Image (tube, helix red, strand yellow):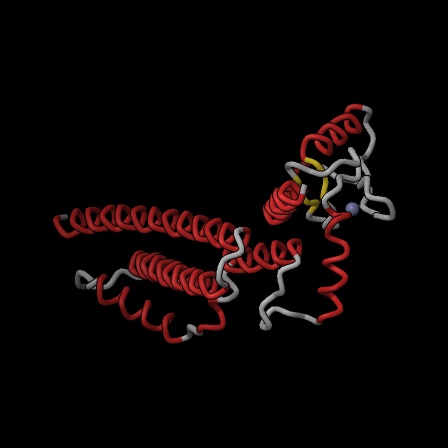
Length: 239
Ligand SMILES: [Zn+2]
């Protein structure tokens, strides 16, 4: 009975340490969000590109931390499952079992896979969008072709205008389905009005075939908002 009791204690100890590991994940997420905001600020204020490159390395370090943590958590969970399913005769050395499982996972890691981290991808995408909107040259690694960039720059002014209000946007949101942007308040009102009439809400951008929008499709377009701010500041100083 004594050994049974101790195994209960150790499994609740495992639960406790798992939940504190999961708290760490939240800290990593926050760190990545803050780093992204700082990088966008730097681009917005026309900083030295190497500063942004440094933040990109910071993001990759966070991504590595996040991966290691996830792998450790799943190593613990797998080990606990295994021990419960197939209890060994002697009290198992959980720590060394976890370490072995963790090491096996770590051996398969590559630096390339870190670049697939969701928040890292978001970071790259937001920077790319902001640079594009501001007409800042992209760094060569991201650049698809010069022609694309030219088109993007000439389109950027028109993109500041909301297709509903026909005014320069203040708080733009992007439709995840088609990539069109609108003033947040205007599109939300439009969707609500259509839904109250029991009708589908079409994307108000002319020529777009998205015919059933809802509010869950809308995400804040931070890069565009910042580009509009910069544009506004620039046109104010010219006057
Ligand atoms: Zn659309």
